[in-house]
Length: 236
Image (cartoon, rainbow, N blue to C red):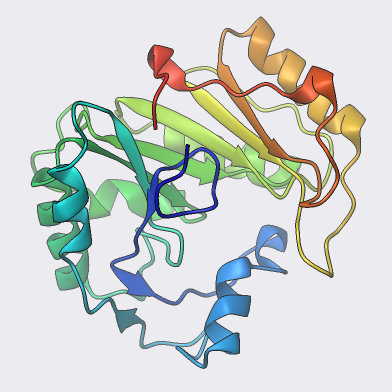
Protein backbone atom coordinates (compact mmCIF):
# COMPACT_ATOMS: atom_id res chain seq x y z
CA UNK A 1 0.00 0.00 0.00
CA UNK A 2 1.37 3.42 -0.96
CA UNK A 3 0.09 6.50 0.83
CA UNK A 4 1.74 9.46 -0.92
CA UNK A 5 3.77 7.72 -3.63
CA UNK A 6 3.41 5.35 -6.53
CA UNK A 7 6.52 3.46 -5.39
CA UNK A 8 5.15 0.12 -4.27
CA UNK A 9 7.66 -0.58 -1.52
CA UNK A 10 7.27 2.81 0.20
CA UNK A 11 4.46 4.62 1.96
CA UNK A 12 5.79 8.14 1.46
CA UNK A 13 8.32 10.01 -0.65
CA UNK A 14 9.81 13.20 0.71
CA UNK A 15 13.14 14.84 -0.09
CA UNK A 16 15.00 17.40 2.05
CA UNK A 17 16.41 18.96 -1.11
CA UNK A 18 16.06 18.43 -4.83
CA UNK A 19 18.85 17.99 -7.33
CA UNK A 20 21.71 15.63 -8.01
CA UNK A 21 24.57 14.92 -10.41
CA UNK A 22 24.67 11.84 -12.60
CA UNK A 23 27.50 9.51 -11.61
CA UNK A 24 26.90 6.17 -13.37
CA UNK A 25 24.89 4.32 -16.02
CA UNK A 26 21.93 3.94 -13.68
CA UNK A 27 21.46 7.71 -13.78
CA UNK A 28 21.05 8.00 -17.54
CA UNK A 29 17.25 8.16 -17.60
CA UNK A 30 16.67 9.39 -14.06
CA UNK A 31 13.00 10.01 -13.31
CA UNK A 32 13.94 12.75 -10.81
CA UNK A 33 15.97 14.56 -13.46
CA UNK A 34 13.07 14.31 -15.92
CA UNK A 35 10.68 15.67 -13.30
CA UNK A 36 12.99 18.55 -12.38
CA UNK A 37 13.50 19.56 -16.01
CA UNK A 38 9.80 19.30 -16.82
CA UNK A 39 8.93 21.76 -14.08
CA UNK A 40 12.12 23.82 -14.39
CA UNK A 41 12.64 23.21 -10.71
CA UNK A 42 16.43 22.99 -10.54
CA UNK A 43 19.40 22.94 -12.91
CA UNK A 44 19.99 19.20 -12.70
CA UNK A 45 23.62 18.18 -12.50
CA UNK A 46 24.84 21.52 -11.22
CA UNK A 47 24.87 23.09 -7.78
CA UNK A 48 23.19 24.60 -5.93
CA UNK A 49 20.63 22.07 -4.84
CA UNK A 50 17.20 23.42 -3.94
CA UNK A 51 16.12 22.96 -0.35
CA UNK A 52 12.65 21.62 0.32
CA UNK A 53 10.36 24.34 1.64
CA UNK A 54 7.95 22.22 3.70
CA UNK A 55 9.57 20.03 6.35
CA UNK A 56 6.33 19.42 8.27
CA UNK A 57 4.92 16.50 6.30
CA UNK A 58 7.13 13.78 7.85
CA UNK A 59 6.23 15.02 11.34
CA UNK A 60 2.57 14.76 10.39
CA UNK A 61 2.98 11.26 8.93
CA UNK A 62 4.90 10.15 12.01
CA UNK A 63 1.97 11.09 14.23
CA UNK A 64 -0.55 9.21 12.08
CA UNK A 65 1.03 5.80 11.65
CA UNK A 66 -1.30 4.08 14.13
CA UNK A 67 1.44 1.68 15.05
CA UNK A 68 2.32 0.82 11.45
CA UNK A 69 5.90 0.93 10.27
CA UNK A 70 5.89 3.20 7.21
CA UNK A 71 8.79 3.58 4.80
CA UNK A 72 9.72 7.10 3.74
CA UNK A 73 12.00 7.41 0.69
CA UNK A 74 13.93 10.60 -0.22
CA UNK A 75 13.37 10.11 -3.95
CA UNK A 76 14.57 13.37 -5.52
CA UNK A 77 18.04 13.58 -4.02
CA UNK A 78 20.98 11.55 -2.75
CA UNK A 79 21.24 11.94 1.05
CA UNK A 80 25.02 11.49 0.80
CA UNK A 81 25.56 13.98 -2.02
CA UNK A 82 28.69 16.02 -1.25
CA UNK A 83 27.28 18.97 -3.20
CA UNK A 84 24.44 19.37 -0.70
CA UNK A 85 25.25 21.65 2.27
CA UNK A 86 26.24 19.87 5.48
CA UNK A 87 23.77 21.95 7.47
CA UNK A 88 20.90 20.64 5.35
CA UNK A 89 22.02 17.09 6.04
CA UNK A 90 22.23 17.86 9.77
CA UNK A 91 18.64 19.11 9.59
CA UNK A 92 17.65 15.88 7.85
CA UNK A 93 19.22 13.77 10.61
CA UNK A 94 17.34 15.84 13.19
CA UNK A 95 14.10 15.23 11.32
CA UNK A 96 14.78 11.50 11.10
CA UNK A 97 15.53 11.33 14.82
CA UNK A 98 12.23 13.10 15.53
CA UNK A 99 10.18 10.73 13.34
CA UNK A 100 10.88 7.32 14.93
CA UNK A 101 7.69 5.75 13.54
CA UNK A 102 8.93 6.28 9.98
CA UNK A 103 11.57 4.05 8.41
CA UNK A 104 13.86 6.14 6.22
CA UNK A 105 15.46 4.38 3.26
CA UNK A 106 18.65 6.30 2.52
CA UNK A 107 19.61 5.15 -0.97
CA UNK A 108 22.86 6.41 -2.47
CA UNK A 109 25.18 6.05 -5.44
CA UNK A 110 27.92 7.63 -3.31
CA UNK A 111 28.65 5.09 -0.56
CA UNK A 112 32.19 6.46 -0.22
CA UNK A 113 30.58 9.44 1.55
CA UNK A 114 28.39 7.55 4.01
CA UNK A 115 30.82 7.14 6.89
CA UNK A 116 31.83 10.79 7.08
CA UNK A 117 28.25 12.04 6.73
CA UNK A 118 26.56 9.94 9.42
CA UNK A 119 25.53 11.63 12.67
CA UNK A 120 27.96 11.40 15.59
CA UNK A 121 25.66 9.13 17.59
CA UNK A 122 25.09 6.65 14.77
CA UNK A 123 26.60 3.77 16.78
CA UNK A 124 25.48 0.43 15.37
CA UNK A 125 22.84 2.21 13.30
CA UNK A 126 19.60 4.03 13.99
CA UNK A 127 16.61 1.64 14.13
CA UNK A 128 14.56 3.73 11.69
CA UNK A 129 17.24 4.16 9.01
CA UNK A 130 17.97 1.60 6.30
CA UNK A 131 21.11 2.24 4.24
CA UNK A 132 21.18 1.21 0.60
CA UNK A 133 23.22 1.48 -2.59
CA UNK A 134 22.22 1.25 -6.23
CA UNK A 135 23.66 -1.75 -8.09
CA UNK A 136 22.53 -1.43 -11.68
CA UNK A 137 25.37 -3.51 -13.12
CA UNK A 138 28.22 -5.73 -11.94
CA UNK A 139 30.76 -2.91 -11.94
CA UNK A 140 28.73 -0.85 -9.50
CA UNK A 141 27.80 -3.88 -7.42
CA UNK A 142 31.50 -4.71 -6.99
CA UNK A 143 32.39 -1.11 -6.20
CA UNK A 144 29.54 -0.04 -3.95
CA UNK A 145 28.54 -3.11 -1.94
CA UNK A 146 31.81 -3.46 0.03
CA UNK A 147 31.53 0.18 1.09
CA UNK A 148 27.99 -0.44 2.33
CA UNK A 149 28.98 -3.66 4.11
CA UNK A 150 31.58 -1.72 6.10
CA UNK A 151 28.93 0.55 7.66
CA UNK A 152 26.88 -0.64 10.67
CA UNK A 153 23.16 -0.41 9.96
CA UNK A 154 19.89 -1.89 11.13
CA UNK A 155 19.15 -2.85 7.53
CA UNK A 156 21.41 -2.72 4.48
CA UNK A 157 19.74 -2.96 1.10
CA UNK A 158 20.50 -2.97 -2.61
CA UNK A 159 18.48 -1.33 -5.35
CA UNK A 160 19.08 -3.27 -8.55
CA UNK A 161 16.95 -0.80 -10.46
CA UNK A 162 17.29 -0.19 -13.27
CA UNK A 163 18.77 -3.66 -13.69
CA UNK A 164 20.98 -3.23 -16.78
CA UNK A 165 22.63 -6.65 -16.85
CA UNK A 166 22.85 -9.90 -14.95
CA UNK A 167 24.62 -9.36 -11.64
CA UNK A 168 26.00 -11.57 -8.89
CA UNK A 169 26.12 -9.36 -5.81
CA UNK A 170 27.95 -10.17 -2.59
CA UNK A 171 24.97 -10.57 -0.26
CA UNK A 172 26.89 -10.93 3.00
CA UNK A 173 25.41 -8.49 5.50
CA UNK A 174 22.67 -7.46 3.04
CA UNK A 175 19.08 -7.73 4.27
CA UNK A 176 16.97 -6.64 1.29
CA UNK A 177 17.23 -6.37 -2.50
CA UNK A 178 14.86 -4.33 -4.67
CA UNK A 179 14.80 -5.40 -8.32
CA UNK A 180 13.28 -3.60 -11.26
CA UNK A 181 13.54 -2.80 -14.92
CA UNK A 182 13.59 0.74 -16.25
CA UNK A 183 10.45 2.72 -17.03
CA UNK A 184 9.87 5.63 -19.37
CA UNK A 185 9.94 6.08 -23.13
CA UNK A 186 13.71 5.60 -23.34
CA UNK A 187 13.82 2.55 -21.07
CA UNK A 188 16.57 0.05 -21.65
CA UNK A 189 15.39 -3.57 -21.88
CA UNK A 190 15.68 -5.95 -18.97
CA UNK A 191 15.95 -9.70 -19.42
CA UNK A 192 13.63 -11.74 -17.23
CA UNK A 193 16.45 -14.25 -16.81
CA UNK A 194 18.52 -11.57 -15.04
CA UNK A 195 15.69 -10.98 -12.59
CA UNK A 196 15.14 -14.68 -11.98
CA UNK A 197 18.83 -15.28 -11.36
CA UNK A 198 18.96 -12.42 -8.85
CA UNK A 199 15.76 -13.58 -7.16
CA UNK A 200 17.20 -17.07 -6.76
CA UNK A 201 20.47 -15.71 -5.35
CA UNK A 202 18.50 -13.74 -2.74
CA UNK A 203 16.28 -16.65 -1.76
CA UNK A 204 19.27 -18.97 -1.46
CA UNK A 205 21.05 -16.45 0.78
CA UNK A 206 17.89 -15.85 2.88
CA UNK A 207 17.79 -12.21 1.78
CA UNK A 208 14.40 -10.56 1.32
CA UNK A 209 13.69 -9.60 -2.29
CA UNK A 210 11.14 -7.22 -3.77
CA UNK A 211 10.47 -7.43 -7.53
CA UNK A 212 9.11 -3.98 -8.31
CA UNK A 213 8.50 -3.96 -12.05
CA UNK A 214 9.63 -5.42 -15.36
CA UNK A 215 9.73 -2.28 -17.50
CA UNK A 216 7.05 -0.04 -16.08
CA UNK A 217 4.32 -1.39 -18.38
CA UNK A 218 4.58 -5.14 -18.82
CA UNK A 219 2.88 -7.34 -16.26
CA UNK A 220 5.20 -9.10 -13.85
CA UNK A 221 5.22 -12.87 -14.54
CA UNK A 222 3.65 -14.87 -11.74
CA UNK A 223 6.92 -16.49 -10.69
CA UNK A 224 8.53 -13.06 -10.31
CA UNK A 225 5.73 -11.61 -8.18
CA UNK A 226 7.91 -11.78 -5.08
CA UNK A 227 7.46 -8.87 -2.68
CA UNK A 228 9.21 -9.29 0.63
CA UNK A 229 10.47 -6.88 3.25
CA UNK A 230 13.47 -7.39 5.54
CA UNK A 231 13.23 -8.65 9.12
CA UNK A 232 9.68 -9.89 8.59
CA UNK A 233 8.46 -6.35 7.95
CA UNK A 234 4.97 -6.81 6.51
CA UNK A 235 3.88 -3.18 6.41
CA UNK A 236 5.27 -0.09 4.74
